[in-house]
Image 1: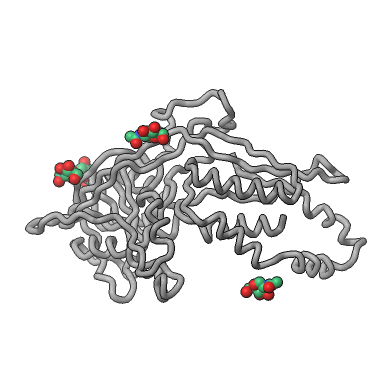
Image 2: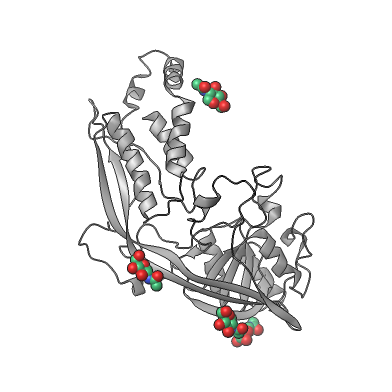
Length: 357
Ligand SMILES: *[C@@H]1O[C@H](CO)[C@@H](O)[C@H](O)[C@H]1NC(C)=O
Ligand SMILES: *[C@@H]1O[C@H](CO)[C@@H](O)[C@H](O)[C@H]1NC(C)=O
Ligand SMILES: *[C@@H]1O[C@H](CO)[C@@H](O)[C@H](O)[C@H]1NC(C)=O
Ligand SMILES: *[C@@H]1O[C@H](CO)[C@@H](O)[C@H](O)[C@H]1NC(C)=O
């Protein structure tokens, strides 16, 4: 189910050839927008973290509803019950022969004076949604971006991933594919880190816009579309569903435990990985340790417990019926729920959409 806001704002488009030049509409359009109200929408939508299925995300829906209603748009809310995934327990510790195990905190630091520090406490713990619950304690293999060709390279170098913990970095493919490729290569678990080389090319937040050392990218690892318990049909009230157990056992699910970690934690793990030196294009940036392929001697002990549970989400829908071609739809919309505050993804889009309205 896609959260859609349906409008026919651009019905006039069809008359452009006979109407005044586009620049007229462009300047009219731009003159109607206001940075101040767009900013106010963004602030209202992102004042709290608003993960899908939570009360905070229902409140963000209320903001969209009240904005559309106040502008006399016919608006309705359609709730859906869908299978969502939340973390219940996580732990990750690093050890090596002759070295005591150290547990990672798995916490993203706030910075001194952060006005959102209190609200940040509501942010969901870092996790990969729909990862399998379970644990693995095994030697680490470094798998670059976790693509199929990266595993083929490891095999060509005689590095056997079976039963190991695959450590890959974000960037080139969808995180769901990073975990799936690790599983297909035989890994018992996967850990994904944000390499500062790719995510911190300049000053880190709050001194600049880039990912800070303890920043973690969170997200889904489901490879399907929509609600996993209603593949290819709508999650309407009372509809038929496949069981949660069955939904979690399809090939669209990661099938192994997995966790995302920060760039700082990723580098700490790689400092203890031995074996052959990884190729040049597998290496990190300035100041990074030399990345090696493994396996081991670094050992990661990962445990993850998720809660896959049916929760309620809301689609907010407005329709303006066109005077001409009323059966033809022009669709404007985006999703509203966020893994954290969502100021960039997705709510810059929501704020812009409300400003267009
Ligand atoms: C809105 O902000 C943008 C970017 O700063 C600026 O280019 C534009 O002129 C502003 N528009 C208005 C109406 O103030
Ligand atoms: C990889 O290791 C597994 C488990 O030890 C073993 O069964 C498998 O034969 C190994 N694969 C290769 C290609 O050596
Ligand atoms: C891995 O960590 C879990 C949780 O801390 C612990 O219960 C378990 O004994 C550890 N396993 C190994 C092999 O160290
Ligand atoms: C899973 O989520 C449901 C619904 O929010 C909740 O009732 C249940 O207590 C949760 N289970 C665990 C183990 O957290």
